[in-house]
Length: 373
Image (cartoon, rainbow, N blue to C red):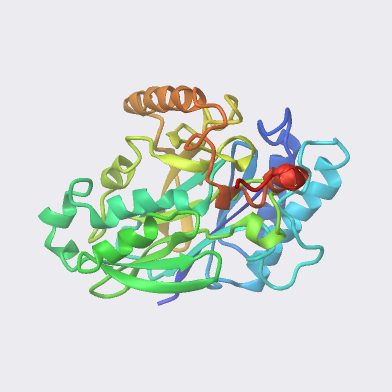
């Protein structure tokens, strides 16, 4: 059977009113480029979205993960948007996620965030694609653990015998570029030991333990590690397959009901609540350039194509009055965190600030520090 691949590739290549949102011409250009790629047969289907100032490309194809043609399509799209629209219009942060000059076969390590999942389609294959703004890849750690390892979140881990064998978590050391695979529930404490340091360790893939069926894939790029300085937050993406021997859509979404604190927010230097929002109504950031937010897009996959509620238009899974509760809670947490100003834990710990301008402040004051007798 021919396998289907879902590739989600995103980048911040410019925005209007600071970090608010991309210009409409940018989104239209991306849609045009992907429509041409579909007509040529390179991809099977696509969807273009934005959350905050990031543009995301969701593409389905049969070329597998890390395919140079697919990655070049994304790179060329972002590069042309930068050169033809962002820079001429003097948009904020034009091309800021394009950290390399020329494409080298794979966009990983070049700035854009990438999540890809290749699999054999099941009889019915619902997927959810999450995209976050103003945070880092480790933001997915807690939700992914809840979804695939916490029976207090995912009832199917108890009720559905097909989930009893658990799941394999592939965890990446973001600094060293190494991965380790650990099994839940047997190695849950080890998994949590790593995931508790989201700035260093992040889930990159999840597999169903009994047959290694691919269940989830997350982007793991850390822009500051690539550039050696702060150039913007990573704004990760996540693909989760659901139902039929995997957690249900409702269980997947439940992991976001109580907004957890994530690193990023203003100047990439603060902890803030991850707010679940509708991508049609509230995908933009305002308060303190935030708070950090996440959107959820739902599709069926059929014969290599995205099937939405109208063509490839996805279900807007956080567009439900229930999530007003989570948004109100996130707003209260956000205001509370800001009452602390620049005092930890509102501001990130020193290790997370080494790529910002804080080292310049320390350098300026170095000669004024005196040893205490």
